Amino acid sequence: MERQALEQESPDVIVVGAGFAGLTAARELTRQGFSVHILEARARIGGRTWLDHRLGRDLEIGGAWVHWTQPFVWAELKRYGLGTVSSPEPQRAFWWADGGRQEGAPGALLQLIGRYNDEFVKDSRTYFPEPFRPLALDAFKEIDSVSVQDRIREQFPAGSTRDILESFWALNFNGPLENAALTQALRWVALTNGDWAINFEACATYKIEGGTSALAKAIFRDCGASIDFGFTVAAISDDARTVTVLGSDGRTISAAAAIVTVPLHALPRVAFEPPLPPAKTEGVQLGQVSKGIKVWIRLRGEHAPFAALGKADWPLNFFQVEYTLDGDTIAVGFGPDASKIDAADPAAVQAQLGRLVPDVQVVEVSTHNWVADPFAGETWPMHRTGFLSTHLPALQAAHGNVLFAGSDIAHGWGGFIDGAIESGMETALEAASLLQVRTELR
Image (cartoon, rainbow, N blue to C red; front, side, top):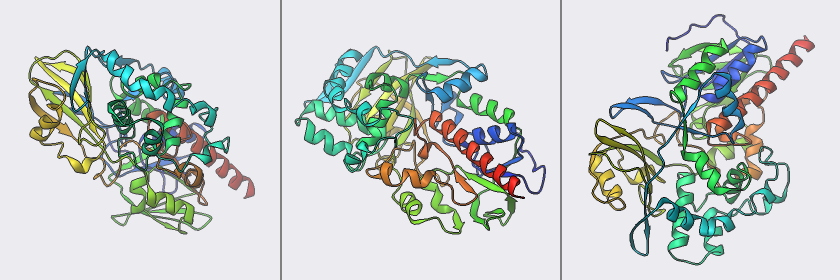
């Protein structure tokens, strides 16, 4: 995508980050007549979504899946005439139970997950009756300090079925469960009307036709904003009249307001003046629990589509087949802790996959360590205990003329493209209102 030059010295709004939150905010503001300039540290748009050519075909290195229960992304697909394609229906399932590998029909694995999961998530709509307004009722605060791991272990007896449930939620959080918020798990399921199976479908079944980049490019073409690629933001200052953004290379740009869409774990790289208030700072320092890995795997020969679930603490605990290519099979794998495996090492990936799926040969792998990525620091954001009641409202709040948006702090589908779009829309409205008030006071 060609770099667009800044059209004027001082736009109305600077948007930091060209992920879905930033692109959406820019589009909404330009449609209202405001001038917008986007600053993006990478050489591409899309943020933590990234369609790249790997292993012989285009693969989603970051976020991928969408669903019609996600209203914001679904509306955008309809707006730009984009369809969806389905991941293949698994024909076989493998899982770890009773000290060894088990094999059966995919429905058998789903039944094992559901044996306890229905009970585990039954209160999702009790605590979150309006899931796009998670703070509407105070009742959730009574459980906001409870972790997923603690609730599972106090609610269900030890054994293989509990182990399977823990691994399922470690997959969902893409991180360890000891600090994973029960409220985050229940919020997710509330978004699919309390049905965990539909929620699982929403997480890993339908992809955007043409890839996530097709939607990102459509929004970008529609937004009319100028953009600077390779602009790493080092500091943002606000003197109550003008927001000035300083780049790590010494460049500066000023505007009446700024929208920051930097992921939570990358936000400490930006210095703010005046400093962020304590509740924001603490929320940033505590961060999210997602610190996992995603790896694409090319397997020798064609294999019937499978899904495989290992133990919660394995370096890679879930695999599913996505494509066939030139007589080979391409699968995707996930693990809850990127530090536990070199996912760029085919032998290391083979060792993990081979624990579950027999007679497969890993030919080649491809991954991106989002946790080590200085512009991400995390995979999809998943809240830790206490975050929802204490830090989410603080992180959503404006800091003078500096506003914040992103999937990390979305009201609804946090961790998804849908949440990023929702947050971008809401923050654009807030920025427009702020600018309008300032105009009227002149």
